[in-house]
Image 1 (cartoon, helix red, strand yellow):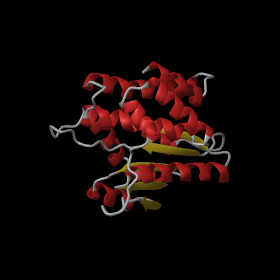
Image 2: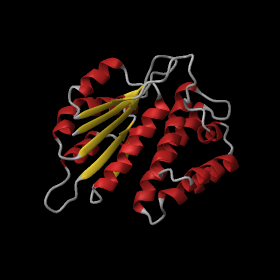
Image 3: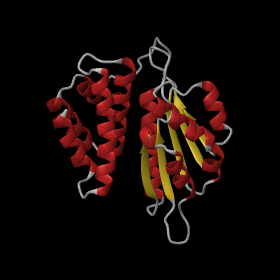
Image 4: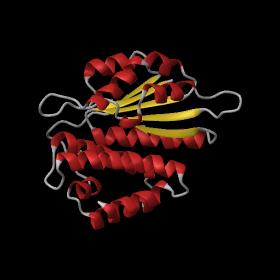
Length: 228
């Protein structure tokens, strides 16, 4: 089953998706939760997400985090990012028919793609930004600003504060990885294009290594913050 979270308010869309994940995990404690970053969305990974499960395997709750890239200023998309988007679109039928819960988190999704996914989804949640004369929260949070400014002490402090406030480490990782991709697409004063790409890849590696090792994602994020 597909659950789509999309809309023009990126922060609200992300927050609502992760709140939904936490509620689903609380409602069904035996669910195995997996978050896939865009760089991990290969054809094989998506098919595993859709088809895994059965008598001896718990049901999966899989979050596909922002599979559809924005175009850069030159109108081009990175090959691997375009591949991830195509892999998801090509397997919508498989994902929709899966007994697993497949969450597609896609802020600022193009309307044509949104309609295509909504037609296959069990449920779609749209989170749009308020009119311009209202206050919009956007992504001007201390967390992403600290990463954009390449301020390790500030970033560590904001991660620690967020964790103490009860934010899920997966949510923080997703937001940081979003910002890394945003820096790749829009650029930034403190990061060259090559550095922002390396940053994005290091966050993917961090997520994968935290799954394999005994070090939790919370501790991994705090170590990462001090390493930038």
